[in-house]
Image 1 (cartoon, rainbow, N blue to C red):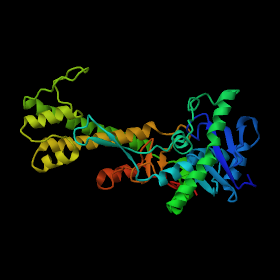
Image 2 (tube, rainbow, N blue to C red):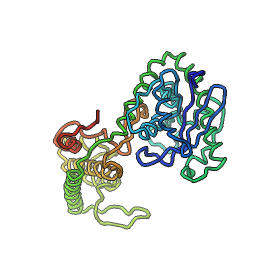
Image 3 (cartoon, rainbow, N blue to C red):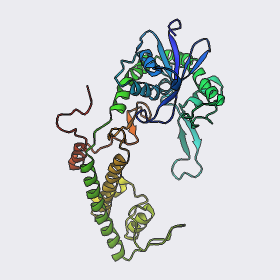
Image 4 (cartoon, rainbow, N blue to C red):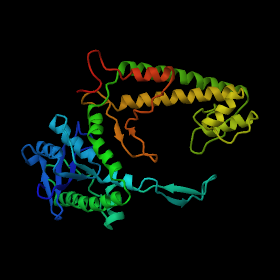
Length: 367
């Protein structure tokens, strides 16, 4: 690697969480085409060695979704690593193909007869698109924690690592031709910070969180009952839904029920989307205004519930996944759980943000 100044890096792990799962195999590939597959459980201090490799500025580390592999390495080393000279072929591909899409016929669509299909950036798709290779992913979810790994598992791991450097060469050329190298480099340099964000996580006041969830649940239920009573008093009877037990009450979560009721009251609408309901509410329809309030509360209750379900059993913190270029617009996003779409304004947003305040004397992020 020192002689080549570059290597492919890939890991096979027992799970997806670097705090509770373990790295089992490390694959390192060279420009010569040679791939080394190391069983980390049979070597002494291998992840510390990989930690040192991640910090070396004289060796470029090439991987697909490097955030995943480097998170396991940093978590195992137990300290923040000063990673440098990284090249993530997934991020490089997202930069190169930004704005491209295919148009596919959508015969069942009522508004637009076409739908867009964005390019995929997983390793299988990249190998097929740029190298004409079909990578089998049958063993991706196999038992990587077995006492002895099969030869098929080792071969699978080697095949993934073998395509990293050929893909690097192609994507590097695409970045150069389209004058996108500086954009890709910004994304690569952000990786260590994204890894730090994920590993440190967010401290959540679980007691306040549960109290807020129950309060929003109660308020949403009260509004739902009010909406149902209004519909019932107006003589509205929902249509039967195929495969579901019939209820004479309007279901505020059913766009079919809501649309039918509003049309029965003389409102000329074809959608129960937020814009249509806002327009009705502004025109004096209290039902539309209450329904918007109900949806907002139900959304926030689900949001908080998801946070509580996703708390780490290791440190009791939230560890959302952060993604640099996953959206069509190229903006930063998070999921599992979503930790970014907290209301920006008003009492709700203020109260939800307070749930993340660290205890007195402690910082949100260490260091």
